[in-house]
Length: 560
Image 1 (cartoon, rainbow, N blue to C red):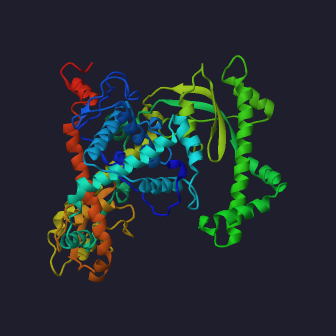
Image 2: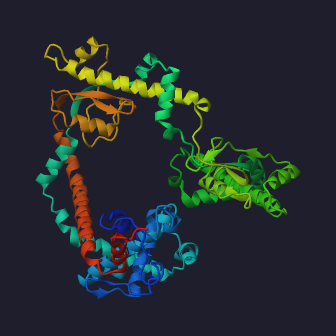
Image 3: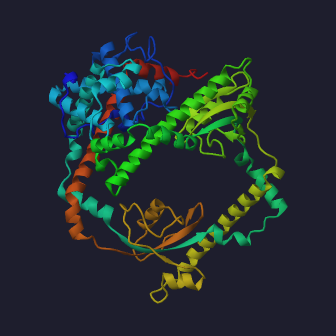
């Protein structure tokens, strides 16, 4: 059926993807393996029972494929085995949850028709294309599915099972949709009720000048916070960079010898102006197309040059790090050496692509080369230079940094003391001596805030002096006409005076309410379904190898 997918326009594939909604508090995070052969080989061994039905190898594989494709679509092209946060235990959990959901849907007689599957499949493929054009199914199968051992039939099963889960969610979470207009109106008023407020900020930057950083105080501070100055394991590499900009002119000259203008015109006719929202005129759009074509050709030339250089380096015998510099000298290329860098931040000298850092930390004297590592603006060929273990530098080497840290922390403490003391001063506020006047008398400036509600996402003028969610939490727990306590933050802290609660804009509420009700019902439906899934997993997955393994791990003496 999938081979004859028809074109549809309705967007249906925003279905419930279980991987994104099930947090699974029940299962914990211990490593586990499938009884009898590992989760990757679901046809081996006893797979347990769910809802009284034996889990078959076919059902297990269908659930596994559905999860893999769900993950790929939701992570925009990444497979779970490429994620450092995903492991065999995670895969096993997700697969068994799907086995449970699919069996429940089957027991309830939930069925999805071919037309719905066709529509959803087309929309999924369209989401991968450009300008509303679907990626051809044969290309999707060849480029995405086949390298993972998957087929077009697997894709069809994935679409069908995903829609089954969506219908199951609608059935199980139905109580979550029972939101009355009165309940929605009350929730809207709670989320959109605005406050008029002022705040006074106690920032560490205002107290830095009064901090005296004596050598003895700095030394004590260094000793007390040694762990914060520990350097991670680091590496240092030499590298040759093939910069994309060095190939743009040559690429343009090569393309100029072809029918470049005709190709640009053809691409513009194919994709239209809507594909270039930043372009003000057709000429601007064509200029973008031309620039993209030149960059693509330059990138190909860049990769070719980097590959040729890497081949020359890697074929040197014996393999040693010095070969990079020797071949670079022969070819008139520049070798650069990074400063030592850690795995979390990468080199300081340039914005390295993720592959650069990973390749650098894989180098050893016995495996001295890596690359080309291709980024958006350059390709790199790397050679091992040095490995540096984790260490804490002596104070003399980092004294300036420790001085700055000491001064800042001391200033933060002073700011917090000042804020805490000022709360007592504000206790003397009267109708004639309001918040702004009390602040001014103490040499402080009260800031009038724009009206804000719990639904406010940005508050102009707040800057970095306070975090919006923290401000909302403080303000909405302070009665109108009252002053909050002193609220600490990384910069020192702040105090909020809630002047009044503003009336709801009734016209805006009436306009927003239909859409708000729909969003609220969807949120309640998701919440109800998630709760049901976790409860069912507690009960229905007890007779599976997953639960059996977890029980063994939690038993006395299981930990080694």
